[in-house]
Image (cartoon, rainbow, N blue to C red):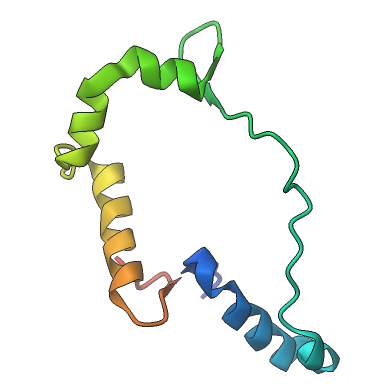
Length: 112
């Protein structure tokens, strides 16, 4: 009853989401949609990963990928970890998301 309602959406469908939200919550914006602003288009992306060790080190993703090498890439490409619980659930959600025409997926407490 009090469970959160989540929606996963392909980022390419954001115009549809803006229109739907405006229709129900701010109809005065409908004539101005879609609003597209990339406030970080000039900003360099710096992606870091938490190492997971006791020292709580942070590693640049480029360094992490280089250290993992081709084994990790092959594992991903061949879907060798598809039975791992978290990864399997994520892959299943991606399959469902991209399997429907709207590329949107609503997750409720009944979703399993």
